[in-house]
Figure 1 (cartoon, each protein chain N blue to C red):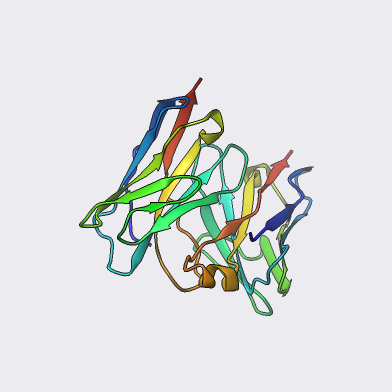
Figure 2 (figure 1 turned 135 degrees about the vertical axis):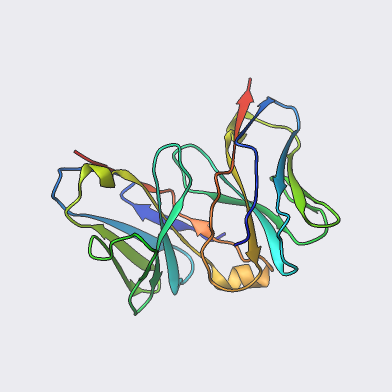
Length: 111
Length: 121
């Protein structure tokens, strides 16, 4: 998987929006942008993914830059349960291959 | 959605003993499962790829004789930590892809188990 760069940590107040950035300047044309998160003492869970267009689902929104060299995961109203490490990973849309995790961003949510 | 179950969730063992961790795909078949290890405050590191009916593929630096992987059925892969030592204490996590569902939804998504925390005394 191509390399991504994320801030080590971010902090948010509860019920406020959170924008988690990810840089992926070496992304290839066939790479999808995936986001996973890992709650404390849990395995990672899928959050959202996209290719070129912005995406929304029940968990979050994904905003993808026009040149695809960066993206932003948006949590519209952070809750205490959103405190986790968020991983941005580039991945092809086929092939039964493992995910390669970077360091991710540790999000703290303050009540 | 796809569910991957791991057992046990926590295990404490004495140094020198062996510990087996099970990873099951509950509602789908998985010809391939991935095993990861995570030390405190660190990211997940891929240990090996488990293939149903054939030998596992290990990442560089992972001892295949120490971390035995068996994938005897389409829904079960096991990781056995042999002759465990305190430095093997870690959080072990497995994952798999629900191929039909992920393909139909257009997402190459992996589902992860909840993890197994191993403490070697």
